[in-house]
Image (cartoon, rainbow over all chains, first blue to last red; front, side, top):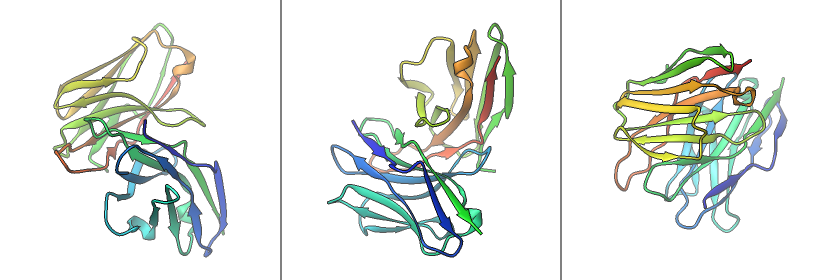
Length: 114
Length: 115
């Protein structure tokens, strides 16, 4: 079965510093990977996805993610963190079944200190 | 506004009550989903509807009953819930097209508290 793991419950970073939120995946075929962000009392918002092609995927709000097949990772990155980036981040993988079903990780809380 | 609207935003209900959660999408999508989000746990996929037919039920207790009357509306009927059912219930929609991969659009969720 497809799965993703987010090894960090929380990531702390100072404003202006680069940030990385980690995700590793396990799939039986081609990986279709996603990142979502959740602000307090809101639903999840799509940030970016990897389907095929360039290993560096650019998304919303200046975020990008690097697909690494040998390490089965899809880490989320941003060169310079903002306080407003503080939120809960979810990595997800598409299940290989007939439906477009996404399997989510446990989430990583990003806290950006001013 | 994401195009997926969930009502109510907050709901407090007793264990003997019957209530319903509503989800409406204005995106022309053909698939809809119910997820349960509890603290410190992965999002739990509860139900999947594709073209108004339920295609997946992930061992959800029968006290949760989904209904999809058309491609734009999805309901989750609740009865005789337990306190451990308290959570954020998220609705999502997507467009399913053969050989294409799309993400989901989520609603803001319904915060359910069972007392």
